[in-house]
Length: 294
Image (cartoon, rainbow, N blue to C red; front, top):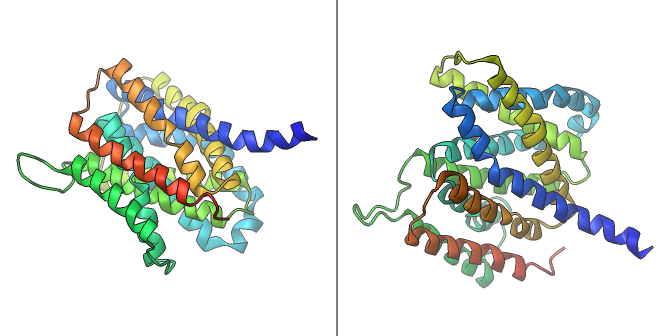
């Protein structure tokens, strides 16, 4: 009996670590595809079109659950869709670790969303988390040459907005706890695909003329990478409190830092490491003060 009880508690952690590893290394095959002519947005479309082969059936299979909470499902599709699409575009063009650190400014968004949308009071603990995370953001974003605190380029904006969307989608995943894991995953795939198609349309990006095996490679990445990463993430986030899952997902930073150093020889400035330390401290503090929350 004890062994059977241990498995459910272990699987969500394993799922989150698996997802964090896939997302931490996902930038590399995407950059390889881009180097051979298959640009980021088109790679996203190919990858998530493959995932939607199963996603369409899942959306039809769980249409009854969609009908019970259509607004929440749509909000989840849009928030998680933007989260993934913006993150992918950010790591393609930016420094991997910097993008991931800006993405993980989630304590700021969690406190602000709770205050603005849920009417939650800002306790001293919440203010402490907010202040620590904001300190990290200021250190990372401050440009010593211009004195500006604004994001330095489009990759910073994409990373920040992706982190905000991630915070929103995690709250929605918990709100839809009784909804099928597969429906939540399919909603994510549909959201990413829809946003990427609209992005290409508004930006008027022509379809790249590349060899067919690049399209198939992107499709394989969607099925073996993004689809599995989404399923394992949704499972882990659904099965445990958000504050615990957020800390486990910080493993993505470890994978991203090691992979970008080994595969791209990327370097990050000491100032950015210092800011990142504050970001990680805020995430860890957030988990500790919420350990006894339901």
